Length: 631
Image (cartoon, rainbow, N blue to C red; front, side, top):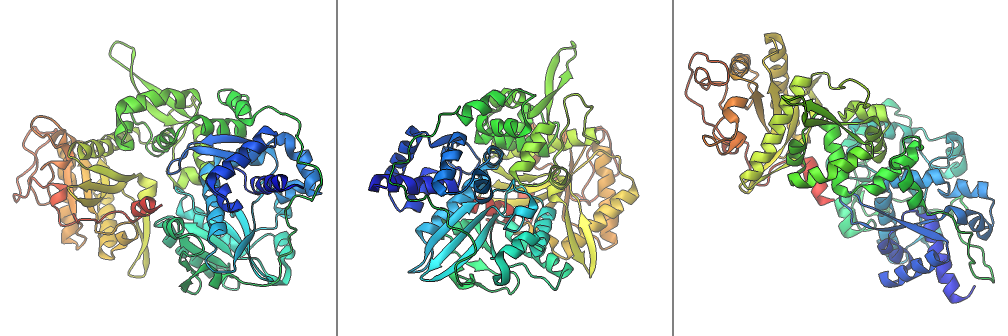
């Protein structure tokens, strides 16, 4: 090959190995400037070898992502000197592979970026990234040469020594139970994979964790090791934020098995070349030629976007391509907080109401969300409440790389088909909870702050150990308020006055244990305040009485209570839920007629504001949210 063709061949090699490759990553892999990498990509596009797609993902810039055209695979197999069937075993060449990667573009792009950063800075002089590739995940288990639950493969070279490894990414939104399942699978890789690597053993898994996910992984790997003490998965964990700033080679990696930390090169097992063939284009005196033209993938998926008869993979990829980052985030809110109205959705997502109204028709037309109309007094549809469809659930689950049933159950995502009755079991409670959460977000923004994070019941449920025994709490929600330079972590309960005394006793006893053993440290940097928003005054007084009884039983919790009538924002209370509308359990009940009930007076401790509680701390808040900001 001539020098220009050799550069094009190297460019094509990397796009073949790592589908959905961005220009910045391609430049690092080639060791050239980004303008040169862009020019090489354009040359391959003109020759018909590669195509591109733009996917807008939360937390990632919108950029052109390159991949090999389907019509070029036969010619590519010839250049690699392998058959097309063998090609599918070595690289993600099939159409379904590409569609799946588009759906999981957030993870795919981040893994590509990780490998490109490692190529640019392996962390020590004399090291280089010899090989890197995405894995053909559509292969049968018996054909796979890698452990389950990993996304990429790489190999570092130092002279005659090699250090192969696998890459796994911890997707945001994956529940802890899925982490445990992945850890257990790493202990039992497929027999074909173990045989492929022989006596040298499986290479380690480099796991990049986000925020609190890192500690969840340490616990998951520990539980997996306890279930099979005779096995041990070689896993190294690093923080996504540090990997992004310092680079994978220079980041601090932790071995959860030994507790040791250090540089990547110090942990990798070095040895002879791995039993994998090099993936490089065969030398050819001719140029790369021009593969036969085929229809663009972007055009084909666009046609499938609103066609119910289209394959699920095509429809999901079409939704990912057609929606922007904010619309994808809105789908997550709709799934985790069912029956939101459009204004409530705007408050929780921190978007302008007009922006949400403009985006909702696209989500509805793509079939990912459903608007449940609410009839007005004249019989017309006055407003509507939003629900995720089963297609929308599939999209969220696949983006998190979690099985749908497991995702729906443990991430608390509720979906329904358009023809089904409402999937929300406790509808009135959910509507009240939505009002409370949206009001917190709206009132915080009106006060110059923000609702930094807001998790639903499934995300807020925590199991912990208290005095050697298992215990758990299940608040309706939790999050962090940012106010006046400080942050207020909170747990949220909405009460309609339907619980009996036994329910309250069990709930408050659980909270007492939660605070006594400081189990909140897993999620928060400071002790959260427990906020009870009640439907009316009678429900509020029932909560207060139950809390006073719990305090006498040594199960005291930092609890504030209010009701919807008193906390509503208006001329008499411009601050809404952030105003002096809360009381401690020992405080007086609302005046007679306020919010539907009255009770005997008590000690005067009314008029409390959440940011005047001792739990308010400058800089304190959610560990999970801090991890997402670092990313």
